[in-house]
Amino acid sequence: MTYEPIRWRRRLGPVVGAGAVAAVLLAGCGGSDSDTPRPETAASTAPTTMSNGTAGNAAGNGAVTVKQFQFSPAELAVKAGITVTWTNEDDILHTATSGTAGRPDGKFDGPMDGRGKSFSHAFDQPGRYPYFCSQHETMTGAVVVE
Image (cartoon, rainbow, N blue to C red; front, side):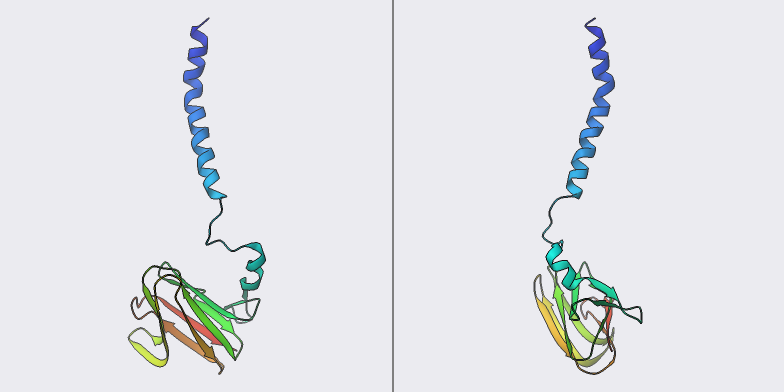
């Protein structure tokens, strides 16, 4: 009779081990993260889709996040008179430079030297304003002013 429980432990060992691994992995998915917006602030910065298909946000302000070598949103629609702020969440230098890679147009050029640094520019005239990072020219975006 002592043999039977040992055989059950051998059968259950891999099942219990797999269950423990799954529990640890799932627990990591639901934890708190400082980069995750809180519900009370998410509504004020939540992206919306404008009539022309570009991203805007519910508060009507302009905010672009620079993270993992990307501008987010890549294209932001705002009303004339709005100031757009780019905030760097990477640990390295990025810029928001108006124009296209290799062809800056001089309308704005803002360095953001590391995490937490930001740059702002007011957009008073309607139009489409392309920009890029002068340090990483594959990083591109646009502000569409309505």
